[in-house]
Length: 340
Image (cartoon, rainbow, N blue to C red):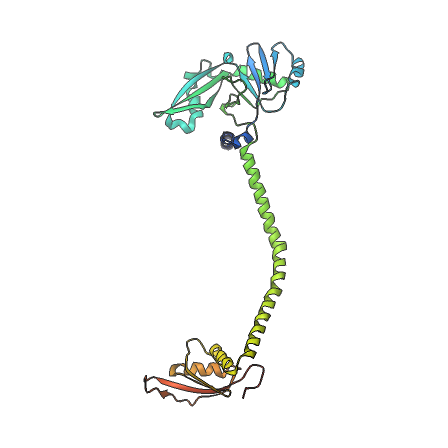
């Protein structure tokens, strides 16, 4: 179980490192995720501390940590530190692998180490310099940096004695102050030691999540009850206003208009009146025979109409041959007596 956990953690670290490395190479925003590196150069018989701003201090092997401390303190202390071996202290070989091994280059380098390293494998610290990767015709060429592990351990111990804690270790290339591309300590790619793009993304996502939760809670606890208080009186007022407008319109209309409006409102769906006659409050409605029962039931129960009379017989229309009914009743204006 511990092996699986360790592999998972290593894979996650490598994935985060890949994300940070890709972010540091962006054209504009990459500057946010990269920082100036300090360099501790390991040479035969001495070390050189460079602060990344062009200043350096030479630290001979015979110099004690107490003596080296003031020299280092006199230079800039900001930025991550890389332990960098000079070319005389290490080796660099070009390794070739099939393109199919692109996703497993670290494992391929470990297997190829016996034929690539001039040093005994147990005493070899190595890492691929992936920025040199070149793929052509189904093969991948990449540089492999190597130093003696005993030299690496000794240099790390001396750096620690001087109060320095390297964030990476690599082999010198053209620019002594360049950011490292690999870490000989663990044989992996070196993430940019600036601001982590992955952590920035996680932080931004967390802030957005907290803001969204805060807005949701504020909406449920404060805004929705307040909105209900505001909307309820407005709804009641709108309903009352509509009723007032309808009542005023009805009061201003003539009896025939009122009677026709009430009749249209009270007729059931699917029932039709073909002839309507209004005279001094009396209303005569004619329609097709099959609508008679529904029409009579609807109008007899309506408060606007009273005295519905239906002879119970239907009359055949001589022109169309359809049977018709005749219904007489009185119309009563709501809230008043029937009009004469």
